[in-house]
Length: 442
Image (cartoon, rainbow, N blue to C red; front, side):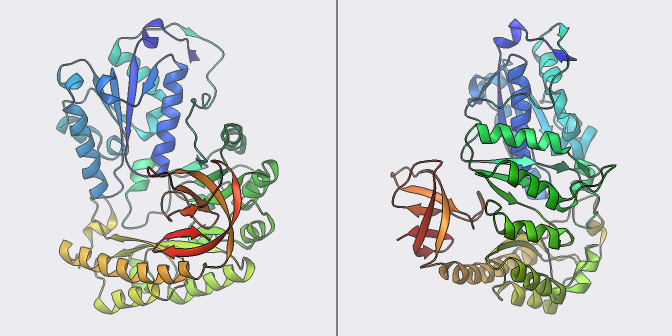
């Protein structure tokens, strides 16, 4: 049953503070839509809101600490301190810490774990004393997007949860078991984004490669991508967070054949030493990964590759770390994200022998970061003189026009500075110069 709009709700405003990754941003969008559909006003100004929802991240300890800082900052706002606004702690932290978090944060008015975010209207109604009559034929899976919600690109979640149980990762305990979203729901969300004017849709999940395998009649990510690309031929599609096992020939064939599918793969490897990977409860090794990259490049010659690596894992020897450094410096990946190992309570890696001192983990991560940056800068400089389709995105404060080439994912791969264009336009641009991760039109 849907909830009929309440006049009281129409006089109340809600603000969001979102921490963490793109998946959290999508969750915030969906909660915002539900609240607006129920009659609330969503504002960007927390200082005047009647309710402030902090959508937290708790993937690693540093993310938890940043989320806690955000919660305390909100609790310190005048409207909260004076009792005029309620604070809801939502997302990963309540899912991970449950009753312990509620006990340690009595100042918060409510807690809403990831699995309960569809109940956001009922939670806010209860806190603000809003009552309404039940009515309607049932709310749609997602209410309509809000005006101005989309920019030039949109993240679309295709699944949630994870079953992999990597030894260092808390996500299965936070998000629960893996489950694919139905194709019809994904296609509807893409349609809404395209009609709102986005030029690129980025398909995201904890494990995109598993999409459809849990259906009664199994589907594949290759089928999903091919079907969406055919249905929306003017829209770029990009896949993010694809585990090595998800790189299939069928997927690569779609990527090579469909011009509106970005030749871009984000494949988190985490390490390349076989012993370390087995301790992580992951498969593969350097030889396997190098062969995989070679196979990808054979089927998709112009592919752009991104990965993530973890430095300072428990028991990681100097020799194993040197192997990781050598791999990062080899230049087979265009972009590399680097993280120091974070010992997360409740994960298998938290209990392992051979825990390295925090200073060692951070030092190794910085050394790995430096090597990765050097290799990436060389790869990016090789693009000088080549031409790439670019999605025009906006202007800097000084008026400089910028966009993203098809080889640059949103928010992580830098931008391309442009001489001309209008926002939302796609232009073929010849690269005249590069500086670190940024590119510049001739």
